[in-house]
Image 1 (cartoon, rainbow, N blue to C red):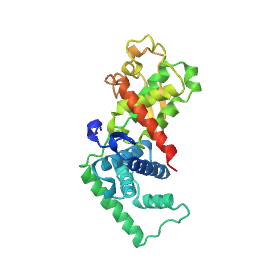
Image 2 (image 1 turned 135 degrees about the horizontal axis):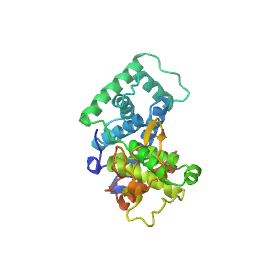
Image 3 (image 1 turned 90 degrees about the vertical axis):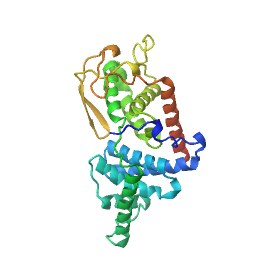
Image 4 (image 1 turned 60 degrees about the vertical axis):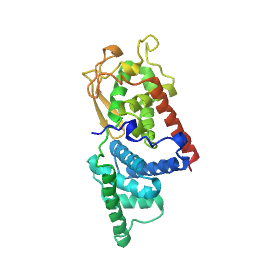
Length: 287
């Protein structure tokens, strides 16, 4: 499983950063939005969709945007992600969903020469993507970390505070939207998971108990209790067994680690939050 870090794609930047044209970032935003919407219509789970977005972003980290049709690359990324994450998709379904996306009133394509040309293009582009990425198409996503962090947070926060604020729903939505940009290539999975959870807490003004008196911030101390087990299905998280409230300093987690992220700093969180806000700003500018 490949962990993509900042050094993996230094060329990817948010709109306006490092001289990268805003127009290019808007194209990537539109195409990843297409990947997400097509993925939902194809019945893809969260992880395969995230893998498809990461494959797309990483491909154009290596290749100039003008070299290939980004939507063809996106369709191939969806097809390849289905294989990588063992949620296999038929090329015919991908073609029909994509055709309906661009032509909402159109009928499914007939099995004619145009269809077979599109199918061959997707397959050939898939081989190109694999060669460009040197067959490194398995990624470590933030989803499993966010799942564990949410269980820990729910275990520590006041029950009524947790029930009246949609922290988990907001955190999952922020994580999903982060794939519109290249955050998945610039930041570690654990850092992204903590940052979206941090932002969700800030949005609703929820404070972690005893945070002011603690020697370390909550993301450097806590984890999931050993007796807690969780399952992740689709876009939701379900704690099957949760201990009673346990202080952060006494929490020991299962995989993926004993603490949230002991190498994470506040400036890193601020950078991730800033990039997320710029993604949402871009969304308001694109019809």
